[in-house]
View 1 (tube, one colour):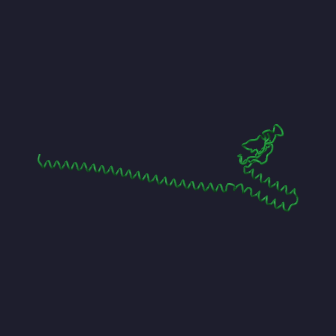
View 2 (cartoon, helix red, strand yellow):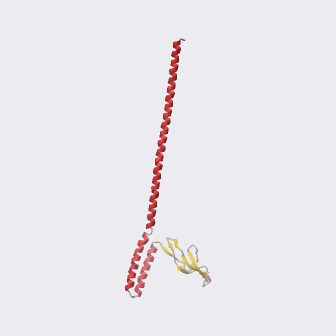
Amino acid sequence: MSKQENQGKERESLEETNENQSAETNENELVEEVQVSETEKLQQQLDEQKDKFVRLLAEFENYKRRTAKERMELIQTAGKDIIVSLLDVLDDCDRAEKQMQTDTDIKHVKEGAALVFNKFRNVMQAKGVKVLENANNDFDVEQHEAIAEIPAPTPELSGKIIDEVQKGYLLNDKLIRFAKVVVGK
């Protein structure tokens, strides 16, 4: 083989090596580009998720503030319905008081007071307030508060309520005030 042929083969081999290296470099660049684009994609997805999280957190904070505000408004106006209902009774009390100052007939005064008291009881009953009935019932610590114990007038009244000092009340069948009672022993 001649020197020129050897040099030609070496050039071909060198060119082939360069082409292989060039192909490998292109492949490596493509792999790097794919990795970079995947990294960018993942970074973009992460940024989107962070944005969603921040927005959701802000929305939740706004929800908490709004519900707290609504709760405060509800607490402040919770008794409004009852108060409005009782204003009519208050008006009747004012009229009865005015009438008492001018009327000398005690019978009229008693009738007027009875009407006002009945109206008040009806309004309370319409709102779900009921009187806890206690006369001659057994003493129940869930509903009664014993303020005194006295000897029972008869053996049947032992452990029963003999006298009611202060009435107990239920609101929609839930106890809101214990009855203060005297119990026989």
